[in-house]
Length: 403
Image (cartoon, rainbow, N blue to C red; front, top):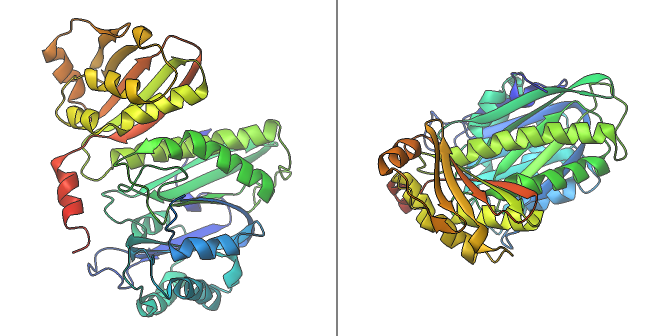
């Protein structure tokens, strides 16, 4: 695989744009995004498992029930959740796409992000559609900016890869910095590819890869109401459609995995108020389930997150989280180390502390990307989870998020 420029517009046949239409008060912030394909696409989605679901998710589920879609419309600044007319507004957003660009409303994925429980006024969206549609082109960055809420940077990526003898491309944009601790997805992610796959195989690939990527992120322990990951595949690269497991399916999964891991790191590093990306790598587990449970539990620990903010090598908080994870482990075999660009520091061996330099620890943990390495020494399974430190700024952001 080779990283390429272009985000969701890198694959053949896709266009995007993002504008400020007036949902958000700040006129400098884009708040409406549109992604379109020249042709109808195989589509696959995963959604939040929160019982409280945004109206756009309910509408999108109906629209992609047949396994196809051709466009994505998304607004920021308002979640369109817990509103009596929410589904009607979401359907009307799709109808606006049909009216403006000719793509059937039933083939439109709709998403919203922002404040919950505030009615979403359709008027600014309708007023902004002409500008949004007229500007469709290679504008992945504008679309990525338009779906941001408290994100500080846009998130996009694209790779080229070989599939069935053809050069294919996969690209994505994402938003997400808070309310992140998933059972399924946990942010808004829109993926495009010019590879050809059946809807069934596309869904299998997405569902499988989500489990080891987006389901392994935690920023704050909350699961949002509007989380969605959507993949559109238009087949423009000309490969023989992937309709069964095998070499080509595995090649696509590797490309999709690479996109998702990149976005996991970007999302976690941009966590609300965060100053550091935390990456917990567990090895030597009895099973994949054990490894994932330990990694996710450690990355969720508020005490550990606070220690990492202060560059404090309080490894006891790691071992504590390992111990209450509920995973089948032998605590007498656990090793713990911290690693960053500044070096590696071993702090625990066989469940007991070992001498280390506090000055060296401070130097290593003062970097903006920290690895927490845990060896369980009981098997061959491994897993990775991503998170961030817990800072004063997180409280400030969420103390006045609505007002």
